[in-house]
Length: 239
Image (cartoon, rainbow, N blue to C red; front, side, top):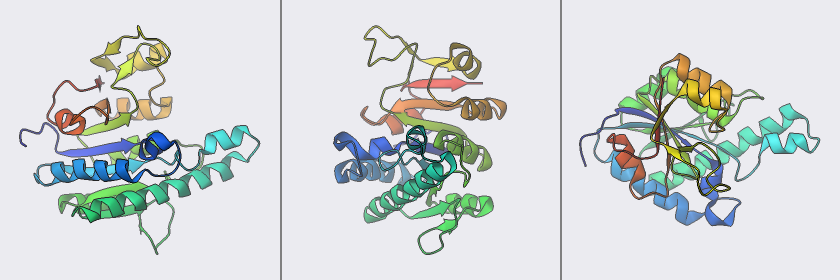
């Protein structure tokens, strides 16, 4: 495995992906398969990988707030769900021999380091996978925005967002079988077309900091490896 296009990578994983077909919680087969893919990439010692993980498989703050829960409180609960997923992912990775560190924006010293930018970068330089949890530590921000923020902070070369579909489409491909996939698209076009791939804060943050984005599906064989090599996998978003 050689010829990687990107050196330092921020991978955004949704909590829903970790749930697999069961729809809730963490599917051991899914998380083990993901850990194996990451191990293969990290074994090349050519990539520095950070991961931001969502918590939607356990709790969704936005959904709870629409049911009457206070939005700030709901978002804090959602942040704690991301910590649970981060710890599960850490265990799966270390079980296959990948060294990791979990850094949380919400201090919880018994289970994770508190997020410190310089420390995170040093871990990456030493070949450890850094898993960011706890969102930004503030309510009203999505994990997509958290991922974009962390990618900019660690000077990532690319932001990779794993989704249920293999890229960005002009309409919902699940509802519309004739939806067309973009091989590449600009951030400005995403905002103009109002494509719901990420919230506008995350998109603007990436665009303003000239950070390329790859939207792809982990269900596609060797998708992460191929995307890192610059192959045509998913959709590339440029500034």
